[in-house]
Length: 265
Image (cartoon, rainbow, N blue to C red; front, top):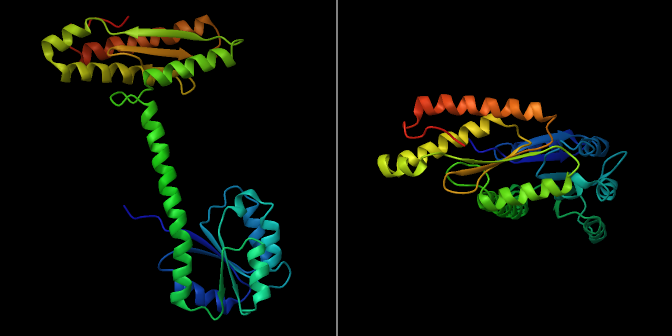
């Protein structure tokens, strides 16, 4: 699968400079171009703006790069994005002001390809490492909450979510069910653990397909499951879903389960 390229926003009022930078970066990055500070700020007023970096010309008519940097400080989804400023001036005062306003790097025009790419990749490299670390942490968190076989919540997570729901929404109608597979030991003893694992997997699939995304379903033991139906309408609604679950289980048992699994109670 082709890796998604990082999205960069180029802000420069010079069509010539945008062309130069486009030719330099278009093979490595997904580049969006705008010609004014106003357009840049408008983009980041939307929460859907997804850019890894902004290349910002400092000298532009209207809202210039310095003013964009000032306003960026008050925009949540913009101030997290690194900014490399582009300018024809290499004066210390301009650099000092740009850095004080939050710029991450400074490139003097005319842009040298090697210098620009090196500085862009240095900054993006740090962001890549942070993203990879956060992704790994999120994956580890998910793995710690999920039962590996069934992909349902594990016992610890199920109990935590059930207790939290009952405490925080005690005024609402809930139903808590503990479900056990009948004759499960006989399945393992006679057919082996592979068939036993398959039995657990099939029952877990029926539970997942029966209840809604706001319900909590977990595996709390070898052949035991817990389901919390959260905030349903009335007892009739609960009984209806319970009947649906039993029908699905009966059909699955008849179709795919050993005859020793007579029911789920």
